[in-house]
Image (cartoon, rainbow, N blue to C red; front, side, top):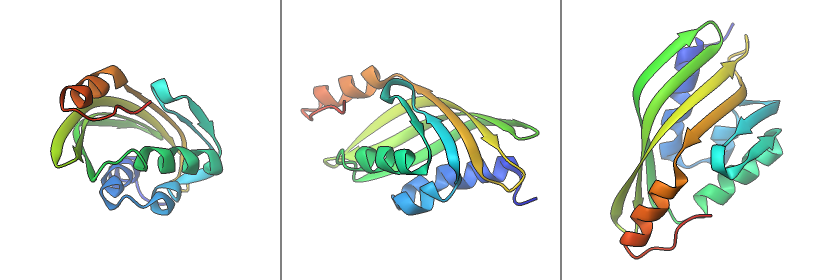
Length: 133
């Protein structure tokens, strides 16, 4: 067995600061499923790669995910966190929850991610920026 499921998730979330799509996609199995709440379901690493590329193209200068709570039971890991963005030099925050299925090889097979995209859009509009779709 590779790393513990908890450390896989912590490492994955920390990797967002690097903004490397290839590094992030490397955490997934080829047939993984990423259910990205309001942005839809993405099946397989090519679809997941495309989603990460689209997210990074939104103009975020930086992103950091702070884990507030994380629990693991076998290969299931659930987390609550806050995504912190810098856009146009201004900070934005988004509360999130996620559930990850980690296989015995230490790879993500399924990620269910939930957040209120309207909250982020409202913050961005109030700051004079175009909101993501």
